[in-house]
Structures are given as C-alpha cells and as structure tokens.
Image (cartoon, rainbow over all chains, first blue to last red; front, top):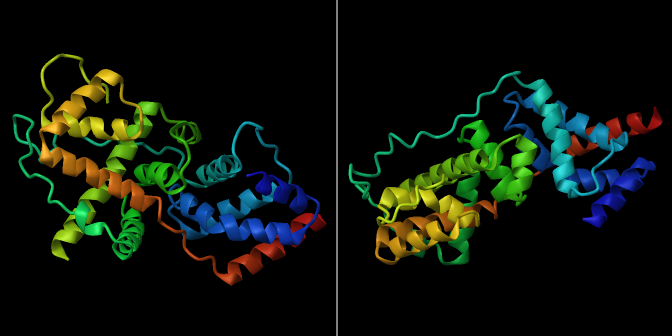
Length: 191
Length: 85
C-alpha cells in the first residue's frame, strides 16, 4: 500500500507515469463501484473523473485508512452527489422465505453443487458467472458485496463508507450472497 | 441477526439466518455452538453453508472489466490540464 502513497506523491508532483499506473490499477474498480450508486453510465464516469481530480488536486487523506478505502470514499461522495438525493436501502424480507416449511425445516433443500466446482477450470467459470450475476443485484446489495467480497475491504470499512450499521451491512451482504448462491444453484442445475 | 438465546435446538431456517454472521466472524460463541450442533446433524444446512463459502470465494476471484485504452488516453488529457492549471 505504501506503493500507492508514493505514486500519489509522484503524480501530485506532475509525474504522468505515476498517474497512468494508478489509473490502470483503479479505473475499472472505481467505475464498477460508481455504477452501484449512479445508474447513468456517463454520470458514473464523471464521478470517477472527479475522483481523480481530487487525488491530483491534493485532497487530504486520513492516515489511518488504507489507500483503497480512501479512494473509494472520494468516489462514493462524488457519485452520491450525482445520484438521486434519497435512496432507500431495502433490507431483505425474511418473513416470506418459502425455502422453509412452517416448522422451519427445509421445504426445498439446497441441490448439492459444491463438490462439482473442485477443479480450477470450474472455479474460473464460476467467477465469470458471478461477475454476470452481480450486475443483476439491487444497488445497495451490490455496493456491499463488491466492497466486502470482491474488493476485500473489512466489514468495518464497508459499514463506514456506506453509512450503515454493522447489522445493516451484514443483512445486505447476506441478501447479496444468497441471491448469487441461489442463481448459481439454478445455473448448475440447468447446465 | 441476533438470535434469542433460548436453549431449544435450532431449526434450519434459524441456522441459515446465522450463517453470514458466522462467515463474517461476528457470531457470539453461544450461537456459534448451537449452529455447529445443528450442522453436525443436518446435511442440507451443511451443503448450504458450503455453497455460501464457495460463493464468497468466487466473488473474491471476480476481475474488473478491462479499461479501454481510449479512456486512459482521455484521462491523461485531463491530467495534463489539471496539472497545468
């Protein structure tokens, strides 16, 4: 991570090569995150561009946060400005879960598939499929799962970046993972 | 999802509701023990948890899209303008 801080110092001093290195490393990830907040592609790109301007322009950073967390914070602030002012975070409704019967036991037990993805090729295919499924998730769930599971931020950082409580963050994460797990099960059953 | 700490055994629905907290390392010891006790006797919930683990693993392997060279070039033009100001 110190590598990134050194690159920021260099690009602020006018080193174009340092800027290009950071862009290659983060542009796609910033855009992916921006699109979880702003539906419009052009507005998402603008938010990412504004984020780079803030980096170049020397917006300070908190010493305790990791580079990626700081960069994502800059992005989210800018993307939210470009999105609808009020965005409700829907927490998944568990009351209507029809996977279980009245006693709480499985009414439709999970079809086993984990053992079928043991080899590397199958795991690669799974990641590609998961990438596609991500696009279909509700925005609040996608934000959380991208930051937590795809980008690998800590749960605390994710909650802080998104202004969520720990429970709220985990409920969205749970909803996202379950949707993806379910879709994979459907795919593997058909394939 | 905190679970009322009564002593009865978990049903599958309760077990599933605890799994994300378990994977996130956020499950209190007592709930964790009850979940483990349920899993030991329930192949369906064991498979479900394994599927959630496999899902998280696959998410960690998702790559970002490629950045088109044109976008990089465009940003370089902006960078030159920003640093010239």
